[in-house]
Each structure stands twice: as structure tokens, then as C-alpha cells.
Image 1 (cartoon, helix red, strand yellow):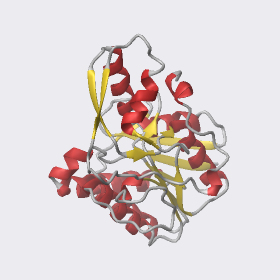
Image 2: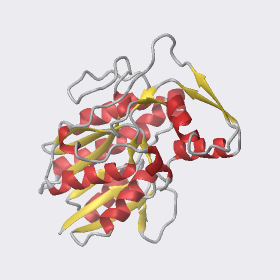
Image 3: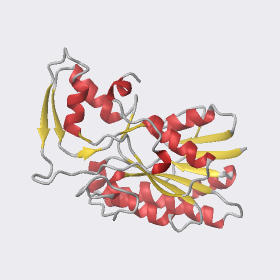
Length: 275
């Protein structure tokens, strides 16, 4: 039975995958938490190198899934040291642990569409990466560390949406309260959280290695996404305002899903809202 360690199992994506994998008798699943206390998760400050390496040695996993780090774009733009401490340094420690291990350990890393600058959209795996945010740079720096390993899996994902996702919940709350909402014209390809779990599961079961892209196969602006959601709340008097981030050039970080995941369900807003 494969022993899986999920670092960041108290977060939105990590907790969803932890519960799904934990329900299967095929895996032995262990998860970590950073701040949220839980009887089912091991508390760990992954920015403390000694504590992280000690945990890795103690658990001795066959598979490590990284679903942690700081994702707050604005916060990271103010200080790259925060990005390094949370998004890069732990990956360096994990990579060193894997390299020094006598057995083969697979790292599955959840990366982001932000490794691209958004100048063209519909990005494929082999397209040139040129991040223009500190968050994107930290993700790409982590990718480059991981790519030196003998075996790895990097899954680049667009905005991950589901019942607990911050962006979706924020829009729903604002529309429900009839507020004025400013949404950018950026184009993205939002991804259902269950697709992320299915991709991870497939990478484990079929031993997929390399870099992959995953999306909800629907390219849409954040403004239009809000408009589509509002259609399902016809009584709302919320006023949606389109904001132009980079006029006249529209930022488009949409991803083309890799063929390995092409049979997954595409994003359906009605289904998303029912979760």
C-alpha cells in the first residue's frame, strides 16, 4: 500500500484531496496542517527546515503531494522574501530529501497558470513561461527545482473552484447582498476542484510523470464569470462593474488541458453552485 503525504491538507485543495484519498483502501494517507488544528492532521511549520525534514524522515512517504504555500497575489507582490520562504524554500528541502532517499519517492506539485504572463492565452505545456508576478515567479522557481529530480509530476492549474473556494464564495456573498462588485476583464479557465483530485489520482495510479495542464475547458473573464453566476440569482440587485487591468491588452492565462485529463468534465456553473 502506497503511503501518501499531503503537505497542506487543511487548505481548500489539500483537504478535499485528503478526504477523497483517505476514503480509498488503496492508499495510506497522512496530511499536515499549518495553522488549523485537527485531530486527523499533523501540525507542521513547513517553513522550518529542520521540522519539515524531521517529519519527512519519520513518515518516509512513497508519494508527497504539495498543496501548501502562500497564494495571496497582492501579499507576495509586496515582499518576495515571503514567496521564497513559503513557496520555494520548502520545495528545496523536499527535493533534497527525495534526492538523498534510498528509495524512489514521487513528488506531485500543484502549480499555477501564473507561470505565464497572459499575453496570448490557451497555453500548452511546452509554451514559454514568463511570469510577471511574484506568485508566478515563485511557482516557476519551485518547478525548476523539482524538474531536477529523477521522477516528478507538476500539474499547472487555473483558478480552482468549489464549495470552499474564496473567490467563488466572495462573489456569491456580494451578489446575495446586492452589492456593487468590481471584476477584472482578465481571462482564465477556472477548474472544478474534483478535476484536481481526479488528476492527482490518475497521476498516482498510472504513474504519470512530467508537466501537465488542467483546466475547466471554459475560457472566461472574471467579469463575465460573475455575470454568469448572477443569472442563477435573478432576485439580486447587485451591480457588476467591469474593471480593465491592462487596457487595451487583455490578460489571458487560460490553459489547454493535457490529453491525459481530456475526459474529465468541463466546468458547469450550475453544477458548481450546487456544491
